[in-house]
Image 1 (cartoon, rainbow, N blue to C red):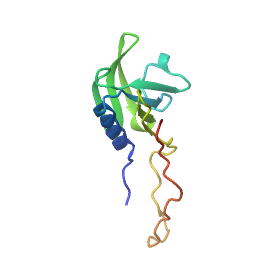
Image 2: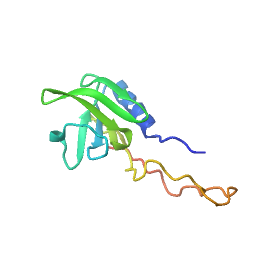
Image 3: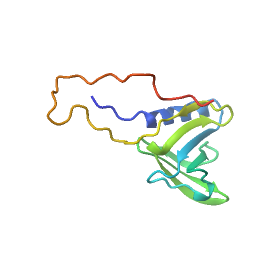
Image 4: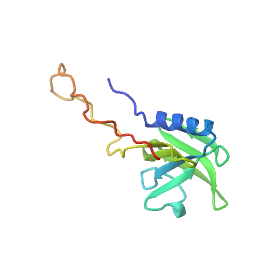
Length: 136
């Protein structure tokens, strides 16, 4: 059974948790990813950190495909668009608590057991520890 990616759900849940704890949610974004629209003058080393607190942005929308909102950068209004796979981390500015996400090379994984393979063989379980990390 194929499941949808967990990243958008985790981003939304952590955003709510951070705001509920009266902290400032920050997004770390891969500004070079396809489809990302952010102010390039604030990009450093291909990344940008965005304050997405309710007082800093307007019309915040977080779906399973994207994060988008209206904000001001250097006094200039701008519409920000971030495909969810470009979100590298979400964390609280005040204490660094949050989550870092693994870089996705292929956002649409190949189905297991495609083609002429025997369908009765179950896929191998993933080995090792989970790859998500807490930002401190």
